[in-house]
Length: 294
Image 1 (cartoon, helix red, strand yellow):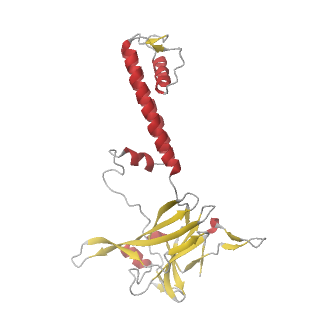
Image 2: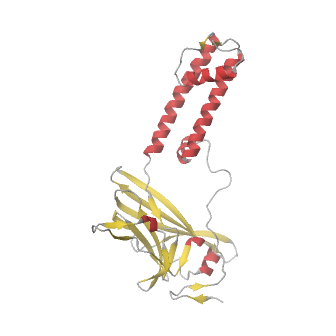
Image 3: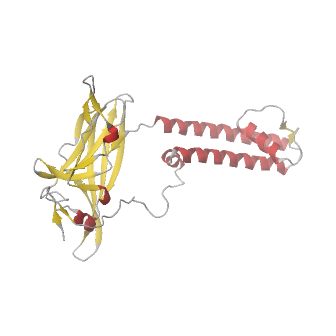
């Protein structure tokens, strides 16, 4: 039987809350026809792996071309794939140690094509690497749990974030959106997106932490929220952050997702902002996810 906590939200013992899920699409996550987006979007380990694999593949192909015509490489052992591979690598990198060199017109043509490919490959990878390093990031720390609790006598959804940068972020804005499962009068299930009204959606200066609040009233899409409501509606919350980093003179963006399993009732965030021994304001972002019962 459901029971009501001191905050007024019902808690049902043993009620299973759906786990957080990641929105995916069938048919592949990346479009190979847009290699630039693919190269910028993947993680650094994946980027390094693709770079090494593509480099090795090109050298294997050109080594095979040199071996296809015996005698193409001077001072190379006949039929030696290792010699052809290392000669290809040195040619592709435009190093050219001189121990081995093209010995025929065919080899000169292949080496010329390989040098052009090597110069293009180096230019492209240099540009993409620069873009990946230079891309501004928000570096926002998010609390692991969003909480639903009473604030000034009103049920309120709260999400705490922290500025994980050394410097300030100016003109910070936040937008909170929820994706809800609905059922029509005909019995069909569909999802609706609602933008939640925030008590404050803008900060002139984001220095330490920011607790984003949505008051749950009669006009709120979350009206009546409790663990049973989470089970029936299976909401997904998207918190979008945007601000300006003065050090980079650029806009920074970030998006974070919360699922039904990431909502805590009748809890509050533990204070993380205080003062040190010298009286300076200090924010302990290692405790940004700490919550405690009301």
